[in-house]
Image (cartoon, rainbow, N blue to C red):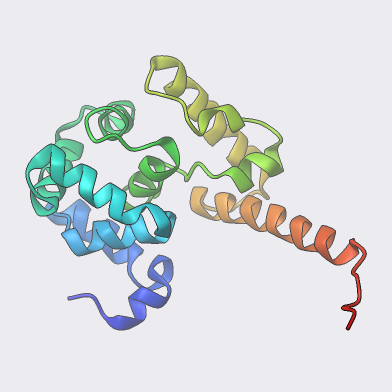
Length: 182
């Protein structure tokens, strides 16, 4: 049962528990996956749900299959490949799902992080290939190297995201404003 506060901030109030539960039971609740989809891309969540239901017969069946197939995959590369190919996710969403389930192995691919790194923007729409895996690995190393030492992989990602957000806000504040005229 997901507590209501988890909907306000699932990253803090739910995702660590989800990772532990997935590691212990190999199970993923449909509501949890839907919350992950909503957290990463709220406007796309219903499209994801429909696509997954079409592939597996129902959204719930898709979630059961995704969980089983991720656990059966031989490693991180195969896990990412599975989400990008069979399940039709793009890298930003696939990496978000994998980051929640495997927070020490994956980091979220996000355009704000790419902006801070000034690299890797081409991966956003890339289709699966061994090159995409190698580039995602390079991205992960760049995320670790660009953030302060001592942070978890997820905190490196957050630090870089916040850096871009801060710069965007500063640019907006520095831009001239125009007074409304009556």
